[in-house]
Image (cartoon, rainbow, N blue to C red; front, side, top):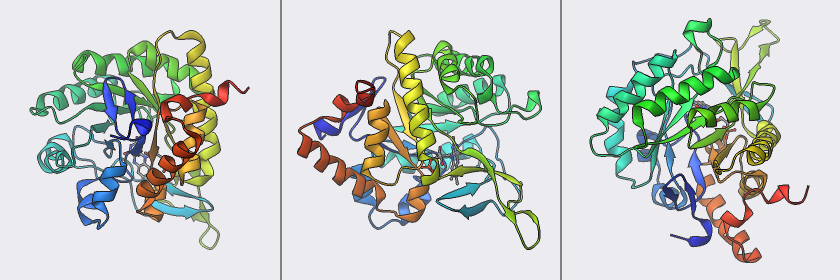
Length: 320
Ligand SMILES: Cc1cc2nc3c(=O)[nH]c(=O)nc-3n(C[C@H](O)[C@H](O)[C@H](O)COP(=O)(O)O)c2cc1C
């Protein structure tokens, strides 16, 4: 392990701070297709899987992806094969890569989140999974479909429920939605619920309209915006959470910064804002050598400045 690039999330050592962002890369099929797989695996600190739910979900109506200026709108709608098939078909392959695996989970109610976490714990006979990333951006069926992630009380309940099912066997990451007024308030709620780490940001709600047929382009009409255009929002939210949480929390809660990362400087910005690690999504669709490029450039930056990454976490705060 390159000491200067290594970071920790709870008790899990990551050899680099680069993670796949849920739903965008790192599925076994994608990885198996890649010629530069070995280099990617050397560059990655962990896999974060696509969102998994208790039962299979077919996702939203097509079209589900549209390119917009400096970004991407998607309305995949959490399409997935369901947790049992995921364990049968995907987990054995992902294990071969010998990286920590975080399973991104989504559910329609607090109790369903708990049942899913319990099922994962029972299915994970060989302790292949390092942790769960709770996607609180998914709709709460019991509250008319509004996302869990906009309500601090619900976020706390979801995290508590998941934590009660897995205890300390899995690291719990709560992935926050940016579609809120005060992200730190939601982050604090997740901490009160017992989360071990936070990740942010998920996609921003957005829409695109076809001017010829005068209708929304996405089959679902509304989608989630990702890519370079959301990076300043992600940086701000990590900065804000780090600042407000450090003020009132004795224990440090690692943050995984996600949103619009394209290069090494974007990763460094997130780290300086307060992130311990970072997730990369949309850029992977554009450039499948992004992980190795960032890995090399980070090493070069740290060498040039004689620094370790851990030493840079939150450094932008001491300048303000
Ligand atoms: C096609 C697509 C699918 C996604 N699926 C999920 C998902 O299943 N669960 C989740 O928490 N986030 C999901 N996301 C959000 C990403 O993990 C990430 O938070 C977001 O795209 C911002 O990062 P980026 O700008 O690097 O893509 C998805 C994003 C995209 C573009």
